[in-house]
Amino acid sequence: MKNILLGSSALVGASLLVAVPVAAAEAPVLSFNGWTRVEVSGVDQDLTAGQGRGYQFEVDSHYLTWKAKGTADNGMTYGANISATNNAAGALSVDEAKLTFGLANEWGTVIVGDDDGADDVMMIGGFSLQTAGYGHDGGYTSNVNRGGIGFTGAFTSLVGDTSDATKVSYYTPRLNGLQVGVSFTPDSGNTFSTGLGEDNDGDFNNHLGVGANFKRTFGDVGVQIGSSMAVASTEPNSTTVGAASSLARDDLSSWSIGGTLSFSGFSIGAGHGDSGDSNCTKANTLCDQGDWWDFGANYKFGNSKIAIGYMNNESNVAGSAVGDEVDVWSIGLNHDFASAPGLRAWAEVTSFSGDRTGTASDNDATYIMIGTQVAY
Image (cartoon, rainbow, N blue to C red; front, top):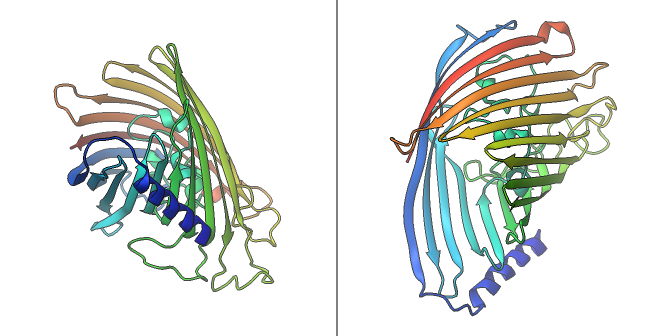
């Protein structure tokens, strides 16, 4: 940890000292943006327990971001970002709070604070091509009963994603289409809002996330390829008190790879991720945190986009004789109104099939959603 912090400090310091002939320094200037989105959805599903009337109105998210950005007399940019959104109780709470330093075209960028890690930011797959409702990548989960299938069973995500935990990240300049990022998170439970985490509450320690992607256009063909990986050690908690315990858990080791290809308004993409036995109880040799495949395609015409997607996730988190399987299909359309800048509308239909160990938790569902958003 000390070496990483020293390396980050040295990079920022070097950027401050480099003599680059640019314009005079500019003090930080504050800007503000955000969005509010509202959705109407309904579902027809076999497993209705706890799902109420089967339809809902939802403020899917509202997001506010304050940005302060300045420029040093050597051209280095520096700034602070604070983003807020609604929490589970409906109150406005801080989601991200970070500082950014860099000469992006020469030294790269350093980000410190609460922010998504490079292993998440640089992922590419079929999910990258979906409409504004996220398609098969989890937009349906607010109204579909997953029968106990966990978060990573419904999204193209990896076990151990640190989300906005406090971390330090570095991104290289993009050279000939290639960019690499690396993030270090001391404790996945530490954030602006939670403060310092304990060392025995079941989080991940010393989380290292690495991502790389390549983005280039060759004539009329656009190519994007990305890969990411994460490793970390697991903390004990009140029931897993040390490596000798029969409930001790495996360390984190997960990875993903994917890409997209675009031509003349059409795009296709695919991705794959595998979390292996990350965070499984060591004594349970059947435990598997799952691997997913996803595919996507879209066609853009004017200010509209139509997209289809598919995801399959197989896991055995409980370590039973037979594991869980999720299949999700989606088709959607969104439109940005040229006559009303910032206004977007979309509609999606999603088919969900969840096969859990034990037929009582199986579910087949058809989910329909219409949404709109104003960005400002």
